[in-house]
Image (cartoon, rainbow, N blue to C red; front, side, top):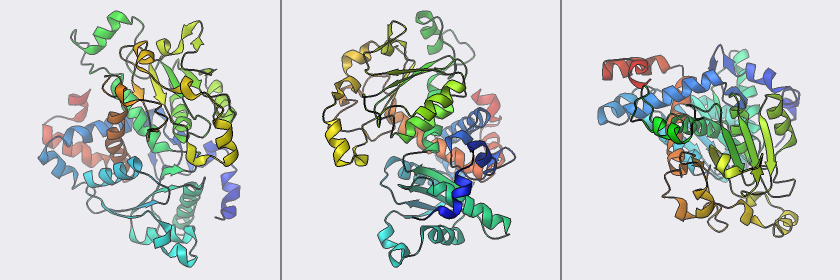
Length: 402
């Protein structure tokens, strides 16, 4: 795929790019995790909570489906996907958006040598939003530039949402991960109720605070090729007093990207690179220190024959959870995984699934609410949601949810 026409835009610093993908404080395209500033994350997580609460009843669900029933979305997923595709489809359905999809380029006009950029522009003629996943890095970014160019020339332009681009970015996964982390670290907290789980945990962990600040996050697995880790770590770097422990096999292709490491350190994050789930940080086992553990699989689909042969020499048992390892974790520490997990390597065996700290299925479900929140935000329809919530419950969301 020839993206050379956009090379001068691709080569710019990230801060210059993100400024072009928003209007005032609202995103016009969602391409990078760096666009998810802390104020925006707080807003999107709150919107997601409103949607989740309203969807509990038939009446609320029916009202939600009226919010964007006049919109149409194209899901252009030319890289295999289950959770991202289905959760975006579900998010669209929650809001009443009509969806169509292309998941196989062989059934599109690309077989007739239509360029992917022409395909995107054609989709924009029929749809109000394009959600896309590609195995080509930077493709979604270039599509957003194309839409901006069209808008500047008073031609039809629609928002682009990056549902995963090559191995470099997965911003909406970072969004749903943060929604999961935010909800988990509220501990069902209600005005310091003495019966809240937060107060219970505070009695055992005296330094525990609400929210994502002041936490140690551990990431384990294929960190070098894992776009989910890159995106979430980028977002978490905005929070206060954060420590990140990156646990990966001793192969440079699997370890933390040096640019990401430098970026995190520059933001004041305490960064540790470790070679085992049994490693120590400042003399203490990392699993005892972690407030949140983010597991990932080894992404074999990216292997060359040479890499596959190299990886066969690695002892991957150091990067797999066991019941014994989980028993050393903090009582409240969520175990997350972006999925899919590897059923053969079993980085998280199924016998851990019933542990209350195993949050990965709930994390996947949260993708519906988080992505629906993003769609409402991009469509500039959040005010309508606020009105709907107050009409439905008789009080504002701020009064009932905070």
